[in-house]
Length: 487
Ligand SMILES: Cc1ncc(COP(=O)(O)O)c(C=O)c1O
Image (cartoon, rainbow, N blue to C red; front, top):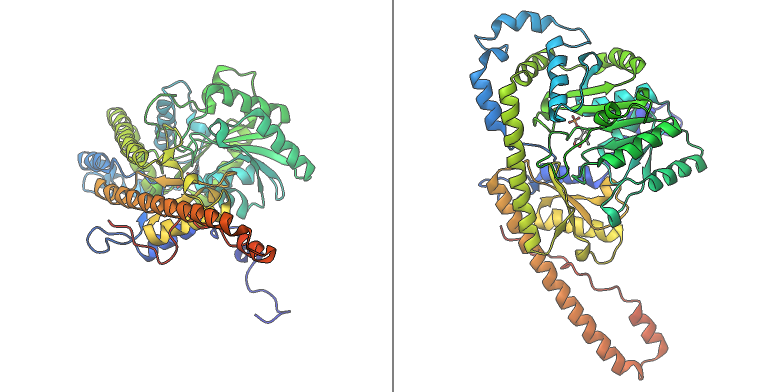
């Protein structure tokens, strides 16, 4: 474009607030260019960067066969076709809101009750985050967010709203817990930068940590937002993706129902979706559940921009109203997820890879810091490139989750079948043993070099010595060309 000419597109359309310039999305692109297939492309990239739950589709399919009336495009469901097709009220089908509210309560062991009249629809949790941000904040306002956090927030919360995210820095010394100190120091940082803090955004259970927040932390968080008079947005999209109760999941709703003096409920908002717990990301069922009447009213009007189709509402309402199915599904889903978790943890453990302890989510956070050339984010990116280009696994580096420590990598474990899991684990084993071999060789070379150097030191000029010291350290990772991992 010649300078001085009026831009054809808006600033919004041409800025990079979409946040796709990140290894998180680059990994997806690498997968799309060369997707693994057991027979057609056995050397392709395995997608382990997608937090999808594909472990229980057989159960859903069986339910659909047994409940043909739930699908309005079957002979049995046709009677509902016209009414469903013309339905366009932004409040949503009453049976849909009732069923979702009941499901959210059931997932929390009925320790919290959800009012169907507070359920606002949106296009997935993605849309729900933008919707709540539009309701609560003006351009330039800030939300605090504990690190590491889901990379999509940079797009969902910030891009079109002009809201900013400011990290609450958490680290592995205490399992990335959100502490009062970390919250206060982020709040002070925002004040020093002159950015008005409008809220705190938490994810419970956490993506990428796979951990649940304990009650004490939740109480601390609620009293913090209450004291500062800022909003709390709690993303609870993984609330039923918890595979044991050690510890059990506690949502923010249970705490405010237990102790109504802790926090002004008008400040509290829950984000939910069926993308993870039921494995329906394609259905785009997102929910804003606010305890603030004004927010509910405004969000409902705004939800016109991202409603859930009435056909989907109808189907979801029927499915979630089947108590027997819901019970069976939740317990079987947890059992299968725990099994997958155990297979990964045991196999990774055998090759010396430790994972953050967790009991939720569709992923594990692996500690690969021992394979880094040095403890920097540059070294993390180098290792990530080797893993994606040579080992052909799309896993996501901690830096894409704004981790404060290099060396953590998120690996998704529930979006593939058992055979693909075997291939992925074989690749990881081959890679680790190759890397360790290279590291041992590099250490040996270094020791040799140091011994020789000691002997030579007396005869070397100062200048030559300096040159030697400037040589780059030997990488623990085999340098190019790398052997393709054996599948
Ligand atoms: C924490 C978190 N929030 C929101 C989303 C977006 O979910 P949805 O597919 O419902 O838009 C994701 C997806 O990975 C997520 O992990």
